[in-house]
Image 1 (cartoon, helix red, strand yellow):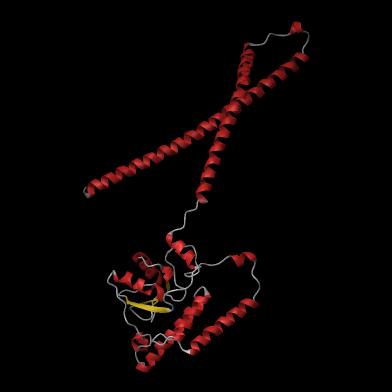
Image 2 (cartoon, helix red, strand yellow):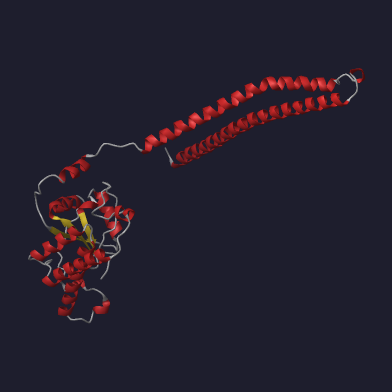
Length: 336
């Protein structure tokens, strides 16, 4: 099938769809007109009946005020016809009222059925998936397998941001719940902070697309690539890179949710002996910041019950059990 044929078919389909919508609108309008017609007929019958009653009352008053029956004039032919029409109307009124009540009851039943169907659809529940069951059972089993955390670094040829990186990870098949943070330690480098239990699985998923991790030293002078610092010496650049890394980790661990995850991360990198080790003064700043934050929370006004039960989802404590992309808590777009 060539492109012209496909275009013609698409246009014909669109035309038929528009005609169908127009016919549907006309049917709806016709139903409304029928309902209005039935209401007008009922109102007309009631009006005619009221007119006939008024005529009878007027006729009675006229007879009372006139002289003896000998002077009475015979009823006109028009009055007789009106009376006959009124009799016909009176005989049809109960039937019309009954039909109107039946129509209203039918319409009400249809609306109730529609509301019940919508309610059942909204409250419909689905059985948990295999991943949801795995997550649920995990809370009742003893910890096993690797512990700790690690950074996985990759080169990037384009400037990007965290949301785009997480979307790409999801497309590849990597759960964003297993990537604790996405960072950009220097130009052209993407850093993923993951738990050691998932590190090899993530590397294998990326390897299927011929993506291999790179070695990265957060203290190297090449991290500082801003032309504004081009005149600094190599030791100065190394010190600046080290300070940037320490501050980035302090910010990450202080803001990540839930809070115990940040404590676990900073405690692990404090105990390790490698390029990503954290010194004592960074750990002290972290716990001091946590203590100050806790004290501020304790001394502040107590929130209402509604505020206590309302939480903001984030990348770690969100339990909606879906794997949509989301922003990390610690970093913005690429820097350095």
